[in-house]
Image (cartoon, rainbow, N blue to C red):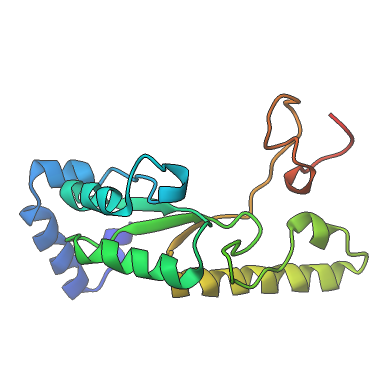
Length: 170
């Protein structure tokens, strides 16, 4: 178990922190709201941050509408008001699709490379670069790569050919 693998000082911090949290803060540790004004224009950044701080959320999900420096600043602001460092997730389905971040291409593009060894090398390097960029932004949990199978023709995600995997038309 992960807890048992921690050094003694880290386990002591976990124990002290958990013991100090109120029931509301313990519940907040189970919450993972979307931290993105662009996806929820009815909310301001201050309002979203205020909610995250008030409920002491354990995680947030951020999206790719801001440049990496702004994502980092937003995550730093979030962490200032939280007692427990949060998990910060993001969709890295192909790479760091943030304005100004280095783009590497889709897994479909890597799959189209005839030289399999070179394709694997490029895919690995793409993942390594995406991980470094995520870490630099403060993102510590990425969703990617993803595999979308074309089994439901009404699904708008699998209708998007660059994300779709599998043979033939739907």
